[in-house]
Image (cartoon, rainbow, N blue to C red; front, side, top):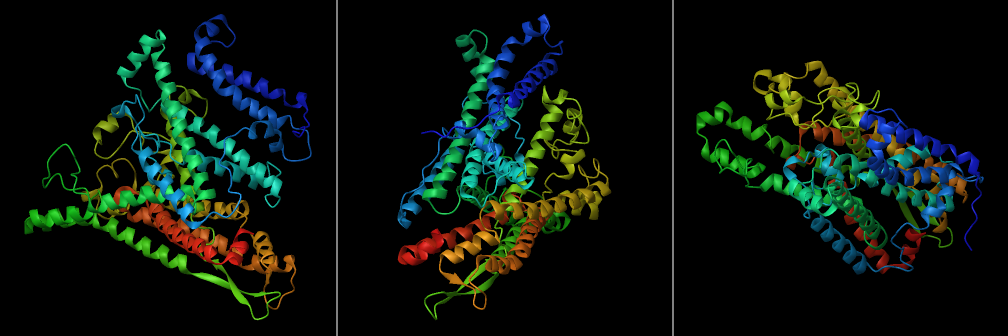
Length: 599
């Protein structure tokens, strides 16, 4: 029998009043006519109908949460919706290693297939990729079914963690029932965020082709433009939600995390092509001394064999070492980050453990120096991607740019005009912020964007010092590094709470395994205090370390334009995947160890 949910219907009624205000505000911003007037309804009826279909589900969800009158968190009011969400069931018993490896491989192959299926009806030449600087982190491909990548999943995770951290949901993640409702709500938020990220992009930057619109016009009686965009939104939803389900398949039936697997796959592909690709920088023209290979190794080989000694002295060496794309300094930076992360991942603190019943049976519980893993830097980078996207939307979107305070506000983010794009066509892009919060939080991509222009303005200052003053460039670097380090620390603390990696959860896990720390009473609270002395500082350090490493790699530059965060994540993910495979094989051979880990 379904649980009856206590509600105060009158308490939630104001939510629909808020919807009426938003409905009329959108109509006013879109058409500039007085709300509720005859002219308003005559011009706005069709768009108002679409707006209603899109927003009523959101306000209904808000109403269900707001009207909940029980003693638990308001998230329990969403149960009527959460019960019907599609999900991947957990296995009822032990899943063998071969089965897990098979599911992981199948999901990875499906991911690569989806990145090569492009949106039907899209005009690729008119497409503007608002996530261009963060493609490696979002594990997607512009214009494909994976256009949004893991963006909605990570954004939903950020929102839930921030709300729980701010005590807005009254959720105790140590409680099994609360944790279940938290995870189910996050799934619902993923669906919402897919539409929140897809619709503004489709109605502004993912343009349907004229041929597609004309074909739908003949079918729909003049509404081809609307249906073309709707079909693209549906395709984006299908691709993004499929990614979410694929992540669940890997988490429950495979090895490791699906999100991490997708990031590592995309970044590895980009690093490989950025290192060995012979394709010219301009694919439409043949190889020449002015159209070099795009890969680091082929470009270096081509310059050394086709440039004379004087040409090498007068600029050829600089082309090899510093000039993008994929200079040698970027390859060196990628290798340095690889070895630094590999070294940091191997460092750990080991707490001695003894079995309470079997005398002489001893072991160690490892607390890694990189305890919070790479999740904090994923969340920090995804937050930057959302800042970049929304600032660009507020500056250029036909409707969002009219919102008071937020619309076309230079403090939030200013973007280049058509004249600037024409003047600096080889450097600036439409989605490159030139001022405001978006500029200072934008990713720094290599030495040529900050250090080289300051050291040698004559050779490297064009397109940099013409737009920004030296102090702005320096402040950009400081703000970006500070944000990556600070937010990684914050998300590290949130992550160990939501992932049951805090001292209390680990103490309970050790207790269930029949182990204890020699010299201390077998009391969960005592064990928790001992673990807290190590886990709290290691969490802070690991969050700061991954943020600093990612920012450092971005400052140097990486091959394949993968970003320092992408390289850091990939190395960490591959090491953790290898360790996860080792654990799975170990549990396959020793059932008692399996009980400890599963407990």
